[in-house]
Length: 129
Image (cartoon, rainbow, N blue to C red; front, side):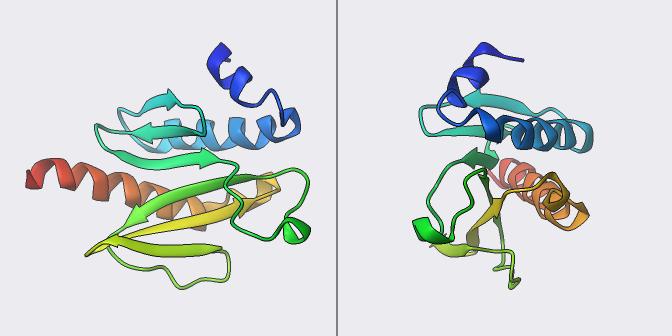
């Protein structure tokens, strides 16, 4: 485990296993992923960022579980699903989605499908330039 990642989870070590499962799934399903640890998030990119993990407060404090991570990804359309805690359109044709995950079972095919689609969307952005 990267020391920067361990430092990122220093204040919330109970969330590290969630991250580890997510990272493993991303690396096994998406080619040429670069992981970058920043102050407030861990970014996953294939030149452009397609997903990140953070502790973004996407729910009111009393509605957030003690142990969680937030997975953020961008797609060319808005996903309408009860699992999406927030979705915004920062640019025309680009919707950013936030999903709070508190159990490894939530890192399922549906969520990973959105993340893989976000990686393809990011890679296609490279080709459009």
